[in-house]
Image 1: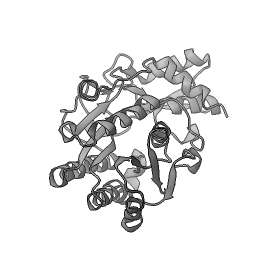
Image 2: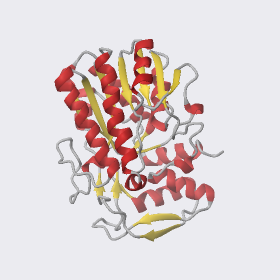
Image 3: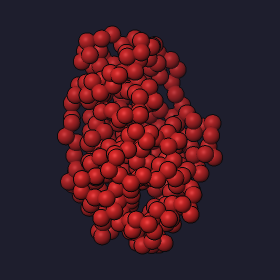
Length: 319
């Protein structure tokens, strides 16, 4: 079978390509605006294409007889999305619509979509987040991803497109050539980057209603996340009954200071940090319930120790 991975030159997408490559023919589409060609498995067929370019994207479908799609191609930076909103809606919304149009026109009926926990917005409680939680994104990135989900759900109803939208939490671990750790915006890579480069880490607020005043988050290893996309695609191909939204996380919560202190302990190094103002829209507690993915897809995390995730990312980012 021929599997298309959009955004396959990115951090998570390139790991998914690596896992797919020995079982399927893999076609990668990426415009390399943030991805790295060095990260793409040499066995994959690569096209440097913007997903908003319908004619070029449609030709990939026609030339390769695609059987299923895993869709990562997107703009991902929360801060940037406030400065460049139109870019985010063009890529994340119009680009996703364009991809679905290619799927419909080429009779491809299965897609796994890379979504985000940012869709849940600024929650005011400390319950684990289920898929039934109301959506209330507070930035253009989260809103554009929610709109992408909605377009996919509409295609499911109108065109019988089988789909899974994975809402995932904080990803860490591993390394990809062409993806230096300094490019990451999530906490664990930021801590490691600060230690590696002797730069003071900024902690955004310490006055939240948690035990140490800092936000609590859920951390998942990139390999566990990548495996979920393979499982999800294989489950939904020709099976519309399980189409829907699934959280992906470890279901364990750690505060920012807990992660900093754990990093210092695991690496036996000092983590120099300073407390700065809160960021707008940061929920104080964001931990997944991944029970639905376990019960329906048979997926669960295998790398469950925060120490292991931190150490793995440190060891893989020393040059």
